[in-house]
Amino acid sequence: MGNENDGDGASGETGGDRLEALREALGERERRAFAAGFGLDPGDYTKITQDQRGLSIKRAAALCKRYGVTLEFIYNGNIVGLPAELRDQVRSILARRNGDRA
Image (tube, rainbow, N blue to C red):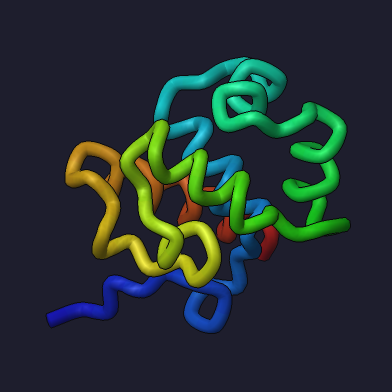
């Protein structure tokens, strides 16, 4: 069986990368609306996606509750617990973004 953990160690993406990939996979075009959906200030969202700060457990838990994702994905990149409809989309987005860095 393949490695389902697409986290920091395996592919180099950060928590900010995963947050942006999730937003894109969910079809949320506006960063501001996505951030507000789990109680995050847009300025803080930008800092998190630029890896200038981390996502608090309180906001991460709100994100999980709203979108059905796991803390394991948000913090460690483990996609196993993602809803099936998101898993392939997130994997594809992250692979594309990681390819863009090369």
